Amino acid sequence: MGDPAYEDDSVVIRPLAFRSDEELVQAIRDGDRAAKQRLFEKYAKHVARVLVRCLGARNEISDLIHEVFVIVYRDLARLREPNALKAWLASISVYVARGFLRHKRRRRWLTFFAPEELPEPPAPVSDDDARAAIRATYAILDTLPDDERIAFALRFIDQMELTEVAAACKTSLATIKRRLARAQRAFVEAAREDAQLERWLAESTRWGDR
Amino acid sequence: MNLDELAEVGRLQDASLDGYVDAARRRLDAPPPVRRRWRPLLAVAAIAGAAIAAFVLRSSGGAEPITFEVGARPGEPLEPIEAPHDAELAVRFSDHTTVMLAADTRGVVDEVTSRGARLRVHRGRASVSVPPRQNAEWTFSVGPFEVAVTGTRFDVGWDDAAKTFELVMHDGAVRVTGPTLDGGRVVVAGETLRIPLGAPPEPSVDAAVDAAPDAPPVVLAPPTPVPVHRVESADAAVPDARVATWQELAAGGDFKGALAQVHDHFDDVLASASAPELTTLGDAARYTGDLSRAQQAYLAVRRRFPADAATATFALARMAFQAPDDALAVRYLDLYLRENPDGAFAREALGRLLEVEIRTRDDAGARRTAARYLELYPAGPHAKLARSVMP
Image (tube, rainbow over all chains, first blue to last red; front, side, top):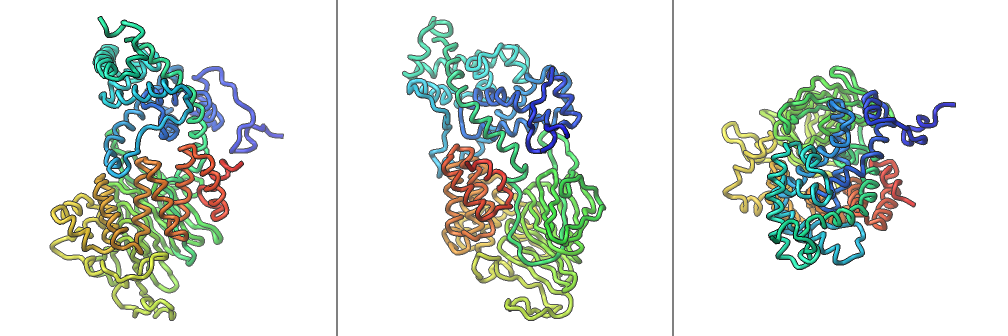
């Protein structure tokens, strides 16, 4: 009797255990379909998280996850450091998120006859204040340049380290610091105009009120 | 103000991640080209297929060669391709061009470049979908005819026994050259070009088929379900040796040139052009990214030619789908399906409606649409996706 993992192309019955990302990457490069699926299962949530941080919760996220993995499978052969797989996935996610923002700007004509086109947080968030705060946060982020918006979201919403943000954005630490400084200034200024956010963020004086 | 409080936003967002991942997993499991693939409702035939492909992936600066698959195996230029006697055979190119060869169709991919391909149909029929690209170069040699295209969808065939060429345009426009076509002919969306070259054809219920063997090409009425209407664009399509019409520019792939030519009298064109012309104009605008004009052209079809608006309505739905604007896509897809329940794009419209409902997490709607899809198209390209949402 054959290995059940390979008896049905559409179903992987037995999860494969890879000791490291390096081994996982090598298996995919060797044409192992199950390893591809394993990669998705292991990192899809990470990709989703980066996308949602950058863009907010919106209907297109699942399509963008799909897009990220299409790029990943296509370019995996060029990945030089397989053990840096997670950071590489984050950088591709940022690349796709940035592309989405650019694309969205070009499509603004649609609001001409579809004014309801707005991000729709699909997840149930029970706290109305929290929901309003999320909406207000991304409304402000929508006004920032894409690069600053992404850096800000990864640093403050995702709580990434500065070096991680720089790696995800494929730029230097110094550049990220500059982007963050500009984004922080703009965000704080705009947040002060929003009662909901003001209340939410007013518990500390770390960033602004000095 | 403490921006670290924003971490709470992240924690709240995390509740939605599993749903997104589930939806993405379903998409990865679905047939890859589903959104762009198109198969027409061809009942007739036995004719020839062909294909092409190529285009330029210049987003990162360099052109990548096109590859293609015949069925499930990698294809090679100059390797004969033959569809089985009882089934279609798909030729899929890496730029999402799809050529669906009807049963018994024979052809070959002569050449593949970074911008397109040359495909020859020796015998049989092919349904072709070429995504629009400014620099694409595709040529289909079908019998003694040649069809040049940059981005469009059509059915083309060569009946070797009856020596008859037939081209049914669904989307965009092409230029056809060959016997009896002195200088070539532009065929636009909604038109059918049929040219019998051999012995006089069998009597047919369709009067236009009774053309003499040497008669000039015959442009028939649009394909079903669009009702027969006058062929308004035939004269305009006759090529002028000196000044190309906007229709010809569009057919040659110069979409920007076509739009530039109507720039100063765009509203006049909207008010005077035929339904196929307006659809072609909308396509040209869409291909160049001028979505506002594309929308105006398609809406003009709906306004002026409500009986012939099926293709335009589906184009509007597709624009919204790709934008993406899910709410608008649902509206137009639903409108198309209500107005054209047996339309040429009905299967694709229903499939796309299912995709939208899945990605917007309209579970009840998705189940309804999936059930309807499976009832109507149990072997359709969205069938697997439909089954995945059924309880």
